[in-house]
Image 1: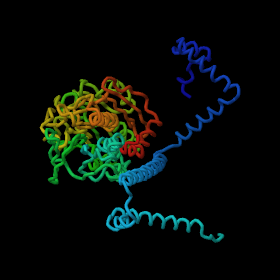
Image 2 (image 1 turned 90 degrees about the vertical axis):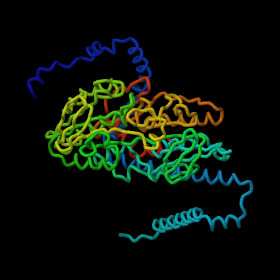
Image 3 (image 1 turned 180 degrees about the horizontal axis):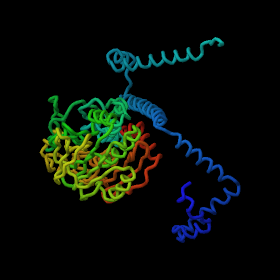
Image 4 (image 1 turned 135 degrees about the vertical axis):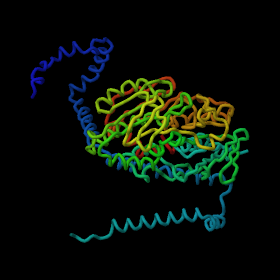
Length: 149
Length: 396
């Protein structure tokens, strides 16, 4: 410890601090604090404010631990979730609006003809088939009998 | 009869506005009374503010771009083409492909172009972070420099009261540079000099374009041993001697010159003949409240293309887009423009590599600087990595 540190003033009492802080000499500040104390008193008496302090401490710990890599992973999750949901709801809304626009739905023959001629419709069907195949593959992988190690 | 609304520009302003227009005018769109088209000259949408991070090795190209079509609602016709001529009097666009598009309403959101070639020697000897490839070049230099002098400067448009691109960026990158060099362990051998021109929008001899922020900068820079100097307006660069020469008559040597370059509107906007901006910069005369192009009720201007005293940044577009959409809807439905833009811009400034500072201002109120925090930094990172794309989709 340096000499400078040794000659530091002795700690102030709470009473001194209360008398010296300019904000606490303001009546509106004191009125606001009185309201807050009135609200918090039952929580303090019942030891329930402890939970709030613990919650703040946990939140603060998460902030301390958060780093660039964690933010990137969390936001990738956010973006994949939101982007995926947005794409699907867009497709549903658009397809539904198109279908509603036709006064009478096309016959099955017309629908089949469209499926045969419309490249995007065929691609969509292919996506659906690929999705079914992938679901099947995952189901097989998750449920196949496993050997004991 | 179908009303054609065309949005020109695939940046964040144009993209969010096309999406917001579909949401706003959905009843008319599903009845085929309105058609929304977005025209862009690129199949990619770039998150432009991330170029700044590229200069510090923190972003790869594929992390800061998406296919433009993937960010648009399916009701929007996406046209990959470039506008060659704006014929505002005829409500017509001439395209470089030779096609012609007629419109009933037009939104011009074509951004601005960094133009270092407008200052002699700057393109050859200077660096900047406002585009991907120059930012990569800057990264190569600042990640290998061992000792010397990094000189930072800012060029404003010559059009009165118009800011440069993203007003806070030079300050952000100065603080990021300081921290980056400290992390590399070479900061003690490198002098950083931050300069600001004599005239910056409405203020004179300041360190930032808004006085309250400019006044807190000296203490921040002093605490990090960053030198600062007012009144340095870059006039030319002697690339052989590595000297920056100012309009005020000073000469400053450098090892790296990190200069916010001159900017201008895109060629088609400049050539439209409507701009009254100085120095052939091309900013369109824009009504500060309705955001209509002066003299053309059916044309709206937003983002970097305006001649308003408001930041050329995505945070401006975010607040201009609802005004443009409401006014187009108002004109379509009741022949009136009910919405007014108040000049609001919001952002989270990157203050060093980790800390951030949320900020907001408008036509009447300047930014009130607050202490940078880690939470602010995490908010900015979250925006960079995910929330931005929701903004472009018009979801946030």
